[in-house]
Image 1 (cartoon, one colour):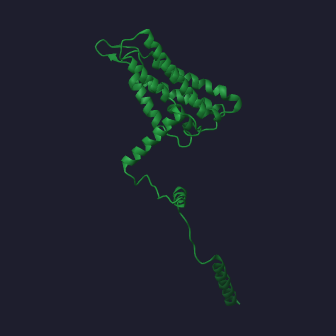
Image 2: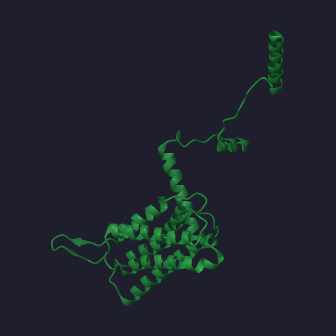
Image 3: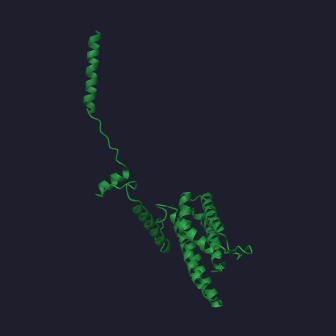
Length: 231
């Protein structure tokens, strides 16, 4: 009886394995690599590429985002693949230009902001604007919003460069007006670009509450630009 039951049990196991197919195979392909293979593209791994290629690729990505800020046509162009390299470059450049020049001999300062102060105003200000956006029900991530606000400093940075060049000559009322107009254009373009990228992420009835802090943020940065009067 026992041997008969064991034999029938072995036959059942054999039948089960035959139904299963007899072999186990799997595919451990990464989704991006699988998609590249389907499109006929070679496999891409950033860990194997030279550092020079990585830096050039990142700089190209930053340049593309700068273009989208100057020509804000695609609303999702800065939100697809966010990064903080562009905002860091702009913030560092503006801080170097705007920092006050202190005279060590008499411990005096020309009244301009220090390097760290510009960093605090830009980064803390963008974080506050982002936090306000999230509290109002915004549907984008924290770092996406910081990325957009930082990249949209580009028009204000260009206005700062223009003002810096104008300050190289003797100042007149006309040149001050030119500086003021350049700063206002940079302020308006920065605010407009940020609204294009972030406007759709806010609920319909709360867009004004989200835009007002952006307006104040870029206004403060623009005030630092127009008030900078030393070379």
